[in-house]
Length: 521
Image (tube, rainbow, N blue to C red; front, top):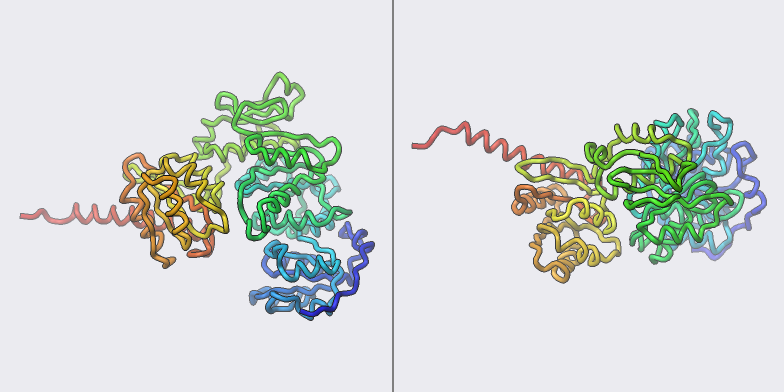
């Protein structure tokens, strides 16, 4: 790493860059990372006429080919130390992909050198006026974060908004980079932005002309996660709290999670913004909640002190496999955001009639011989797994993987004793098995010591089937990341479902063969 420092940037120029239509030409920008987010940043800046240098440890052939086409340069190599090429480039701003933690060498260099550091969200806010909405104004933004439930709530909110007649798009951490949504020539009335704690950490670095001001925002819940990236739980919590900063209309929080209330109380919001609570209890005059199995809104109506508006019923949600408690909570949060933008209760009911959860989120993959098999591979941390186990108490629990520095003992102590049995997978099995020995010693525990991706779920399903009886649920809720044995939570869930179906189909085939066999003499 060189000791040389870059040319000191001119902050006054950056303060003027708050529109697509101002002069970005020649601005020297270093872009960290070249996955979908990094490419969207480079593509946007190149279109604006900036001088773009992209730095990445590895680049796909497609992106390597496209960068010179759009007019950006690529530096590929180790980033454990700061490349001399970056220092010589003397960037006026660094835009980092969310995978780069605060401790990363290049991130630390930028902060220590006084080079402004943005994420893709701040850049997108600055150029949000590229394609105006039908009103002629930029799209409204809605922010959604939380340890769990972000993607489901983002999809729910967008679905409700569209049903209410608004052009809305889910984007951000959900998979569609926000800069792609901002530049979509179709234009939108509302962007529903899912935000990871990583994106929110970058958002918290700057509080000036480029700082977003969402219409409404929610933090769904808070629990231990991504502690290695952030360095501590306090840093993780503080990053999440940035979701409420400069909110203009509704700060939606979880009444069952006190941390989210404190975030709202401490937030620097625009005068007039309201706190709107949600949970599964009876709602107060500025809340959404449940009354006798009916989801109701007591926040967005004139007579909220004496009346409530019906949104839907738990019975109606159950008919569409949407009645798990944590899903109902997500629905209430999404409804609060949609109501803050004027969507009527009838549109919310209609949206829920055709909404389906994404795969690998408490997805029933089979019901056979009295056993229900449920794939909740998306439960990648203990908080998410606890919600799944609350929805299916007494399940045969398939658990384990990469724990990401999180202690699983509290979850096992809370939910483990009620489990029918536990089938433990993953490279950190010892921690899980030890937690059961301490906190749920009466529960049968089976280990899958097969490290082969192709067969680990076959063995897990085999062990689960051996203990599951009529009326039981086998629940894949790993409470851990998947990259030890799989390419992602979706791969893990798909392999679980395939193993279940193969076992069922194999059993049916054996039955057919037995029926066709001649009787013995």
